[in-house]
Length: 214
Image 1: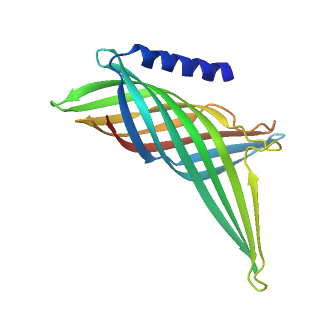
Image 2: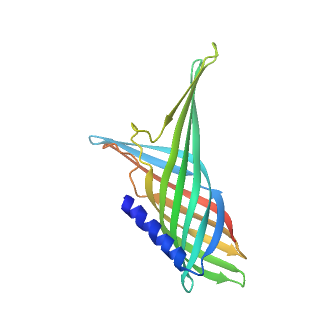
């Protein structure tokens, strides 16, 4: 898998270096993510989901391939988080989960002109996603005594079953007007993000963003 990621990175770098028509763009947006886990024991399967809010910011190079066909390579930092709370008697347990990820979208896009200054495009391709950090913070509070215990653990530590690497199919629509861009799409992960033999975890989510070309 490392060879696949390296291939994408080298290919993108060569395209950028060899193109005189590359346009640099800056983007920000909203990108929630849902992970779906399927636990299989014998002939019985149980499905659970976990939804995290998320935001991203990054840059991309859009390179003309031929005519109205372009290729875009980007680098984005994404932050996803969620929290839950459970109360039993006088004891309250709060769990906060956060992830910081690096996303590399490698997307072909094809556009048509709408008027003189606007362009409507469809984009499609893979996104390489890697979790740089994942943290779970558990806070246990007791209301009578006022006792408060906080514990933190890594989602991707040595004893964790979570895998940080994902390859995601990505597709969506983009509207450009005088260098300003609005876009939205959907991404679906192809990798199993759990190393356990009896658990399969996949990620997916929609996204929407805005940006401009420098």
